[in-house]
Picture: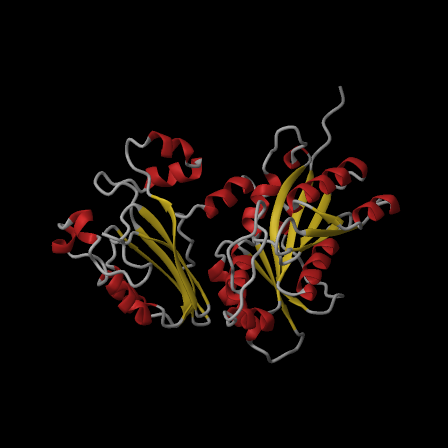
Length: 400
């Protein structure tokens, strides 16, 4: 028997503008000249599956392969693209494939679905290993997106459409999903926005590699080798980050005035006092994420997220309880691991954990305002029945 054929490397590229995405693709291809590019555009409809359009180009991609993939298809984008990727690997056998995706996808859950093995179908992992996700970022467009919360869109997450998301939320998620961020800049420009956006991106995705690239397609910017190597355990990483009780990482220090603050507490929050504290807590905040233990909903893990001036709280899941074997069996390995890490003999996995990123944040003031919203000893002694009587202007009062 001959030796097995090495798997191909699969890079994912996104961008907040077509030009930024195209520049990121070009930069990858210059660093990997043998790469094949599969560009996909996904158009969500009000009902039914999205419309998917693809285009393949690169060394040894025959006209027949390119023509077949240029046809418009309606269906599950994860299934369509998985079939395309496997077909390219079997016919062209590229050592490196760059998949460029449009903005109509909620990237992290879509990638989990794309890589998920399916019964009776060829798994993507049999043919490729995941490379870093690379995001092209136009600074002016990014800042405009962060300020836009007056409209919303529903993206495809791999199995269905998401709830309505603001452009600010979409912009933040795009950067947070990336292992590498390419910030575009005009050469010899006095515009300082690229530096400020790069500083913000470092805090939104602390482990990402940041590269500033001139906007001309002929740029010779050198791509760090780390962006051309496999990402170990990428699927497990993506799944863990989608868990509602995962804590967003925080970058230490301050970059051009941008700071991240993590707040944690092991007592439930009083909903009314939390609502009263929000003007203080959110001053200067550009992005915040995390989960809460609200006294009005002691059984529910409440997710917290904000992007730009828009904030949302939502009941996302139920806390795992000791002895609830069915809930533990139904929980993902990532969730069970997190629960064991943070388990408390009395509170179980209940906890508050929030990460804030913004400009000139006052850490002490922010944390003190949240600490003051926690139940005091007298309120804590009332138990679940007493907590339900506390007014909740955030999610609505619980019927007694």
